[in-house]
Image 1 (cartoon, rainbow, N blue to C red):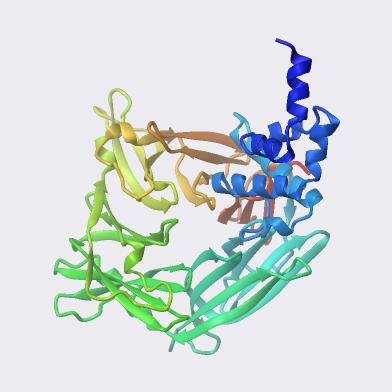
Image 2: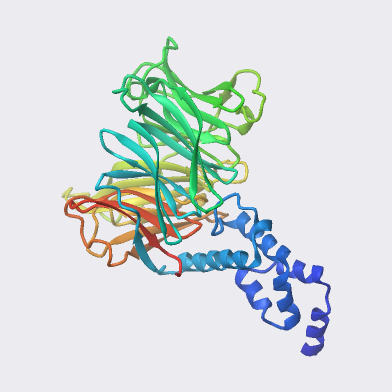
Length: 499
């Protein structure tokens, strides 16, 4: 074979053909392809090459810019920077020992305790709530060399909150007790957070209404639809979810859905929801369908999906009464692998729905089967992947991934795509460790757990407190931590990307 002749033929190909070739290459391979010769290098001046590469990468994983970015309007230099950042971050997180490149403190908030409410993906910013008698919502971030502290809501108490991304904006729904109300009333506020022309976030109050706090639990928001779970007893009288979950009387659970743009309401009943549940939670799948998980006292969890066709998206409401069937039931006790001569005792179980499927965290400990003496603590993590129609093959043990950490985990947070999660142990170790989890769906799903050693700039121990909240920005490769050493609270961003 004459390599020079073959290369000559490739060089002579039309630009459209060369662009088609690069559309099948990985990010790093595209950069390498452009260095082969001057003819290929000139392809790098084609804006369509970079915008298509960004679009293709975004379908596989979030890229290093805010969601909703119009790639066709980025200049070539900015497009290349975003792709380089995305490729290097993915390579780092996929490695056996991901590197931490440093940390940076977020702007200081007068020593007030706080909670991380949401991350603005790709924008180096978080929404936080101060936890005092007079609370407020603020945006904290660092934009270039410019720190930003932007308050946008004062209140007595943040009761519930939920977030989503709509058209490149962070949509934040909050049920609050207004300032000075002393708990006498609550309101629903829906805020839109978007980046302005100067690159800093701007907040608009999109919707505000009175809201009854006793008849609902677990908010969710998708596009312009706000929803919550409402519980009724056998006489159809509204009752508090806490009371319902502990009653022996039959009751019903329904999803209440409200399009706050078109002013349309829809109620969807959940079939076979029973009493004596321990917890009921709701999330949203990528196609906008609410997913309800009901954790029972026997340790199992029931999964329900409300198809998006039942939701009042757009200007028309669906007609008729709707009942949602159960997708299935998951029970970790069927697949726990105890060490020889030991028994497992479960303390706590958390169920989370992500765009990839169902994730379950089970905390417990092992005891000797004969002496009943404590042996070790553990956190078992399960993953049931969902297919394109959000179906779960939960009865096939070959379709569940499981991994075990010899820790008791306190809090966890998931990334935007559900591909990554960060787990914080119950006790902050002397080595400042967190765990980065990576979930792989497919025919044979699996979970990879990587121990992360945090920078020495963070405290070696937390004698006066512990990590209070944690969040992850998958686009930029940052993990946000709030902790209190006893000398005052701190909020930091840990960087997994090269400076």
